[in-house]
Amino acid sequence: MSVWFVTGASRGLGAEIVREALSRDQQVVAAVRDAEAARKEFQDAGGELLVVTLDVTDERQAHEAVAQAVERFGRIDVLVNNAGRGLLGAVEEASDSAVRAVFDVNVFGLLNVNRAVLPVLRGQRSGYVINIGSVGGFTQGPGLGIYGATKFAIEGLSESMRIELAPLGVSVTVVEPGAFRTDFLDDSSLRAAEDVIDDYAKTAGAIRDGVGARNHTQPGDPAKAAAVIVNLASVPEPPLRIQLGADAVARVEAKIQFVQYELDMWREASVSTNYGNGAPDA
Image (cartoon, rainbow, N blue to C red):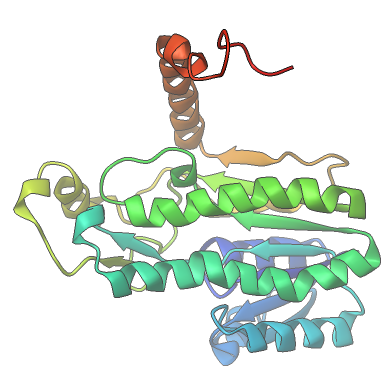
């Protein structure tokens, strides 16, 4: 039996992860902004559940929530950093305050929770961190550049954390979901930039205009995604990154091909910048 600590656990993928872990008789800490609503949400889910109040942008709350988890269960085995929000619009359309609000939750909030949980995992010399990123953190298009930038940041953090924590017995995976049928495209999760610039009508504007039609028609099944994520905790050597959804796999494959193409196209110019004959230093 493992102890799971899941942020953003009240709905969407986070709620499905909580349900899946509870269905496997795991002990689960659901970290949410509205504890009472979460208790009602999971009242029939079974298992052993602790609901804690957590706004991930509040580092004090993060430490308090972790302390409650350890007091109840004695340890934490799996941390799922799932809390997040989105911003829709061209990069230029996004105001400073809107950009900072997204980074505060998706990046700085994740760091707050990590700083609260990692001392527990290091002390145990065991544990697993699952950072919920996005395929948009590996490859981006128009309209979601700010959101994608936060997920690109999570990719970089996860790569470093994996190397830093491996000698301490802690594994790290970043999950890259594609489009899943959650409420992420609702106004409560995905805000639109207030400024609209006509020059972006055919790029970011087209994405913004099409969101409503795609909402709740996405191809991904969040319950199936949750099952894959919970399964990862039992894998002896979990991956650094895993894509969820056929759309995510296709987008990552296309990005890899594009990067390889440009690398080959510009290789001579790239290596010419070294001292001497351009060969890398021994």
